[in-house]
Image (cartoon, rainbow, N blue to C red; front, top):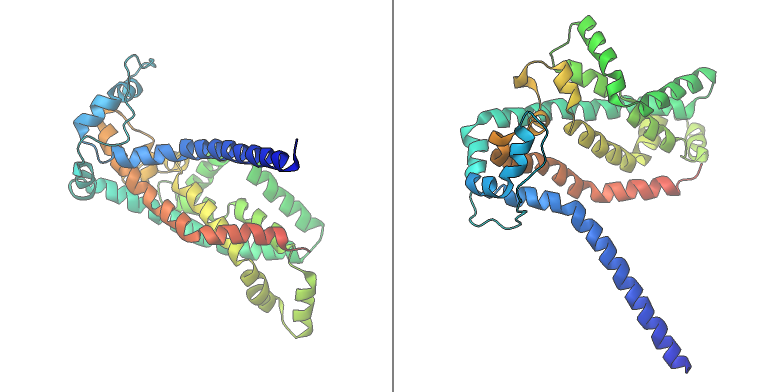
Length: 303
């Protein structure tokens, strides 16, 4: 075969391979995005249309006995008639859902802010100082991080009851503030800050507080954004903690309502879920560059 023919064959094979890879990843992205798209489009359906399309699913979920869905369901991407009645019910006629939404904000935002603050100081101590006691404490942090929250839920309940903060927001906020996740990630990052920069700051007369505020924190800006987003998403979707530590339903976040969907709330749940997704999506879209920068920078810093 001629060299030009061989080159064309290689070109065709490369294009076919690229097309196959693109189709594969496009299919994966579609699978992940489709639930979000369906949630938004179905929130624009009327209650009768949702019942006609998904009634079999929600009736089987709401029943006392576990049954298979006998009838056919119809996953519709485009509603027959766009209706904003569900949003009217959520935003105007039923203020309890907005109250639960703000409960989620009141519980999540302090956890994110104060967990980052506590983690920055703790991570700086773990990264800057060495010793046997430091290693033991950091190892304990790692063990706690590996444990699922359900393991520590009963101790948190007992401690909250002993402190007299059970059935208050502090029972959720305080354990969240001292979660070891952010400490572990920030410690690993700060350990990779070049020691030469810190030594140069010391030669210029900088103290520990100045090194912390002018070197470590600014260099950790991107990873702080990344950790803050992960913390926010984790606690924004929490269900077990408020169910166990908050007996008053009026103080529980919106995530608890979304975990208790039944046949009577199916139509309204799509609108509530759409509103619930707005803040995480906006935060992710706004902070996407910080996440990428944090990941790439953390991989590029060498200690």
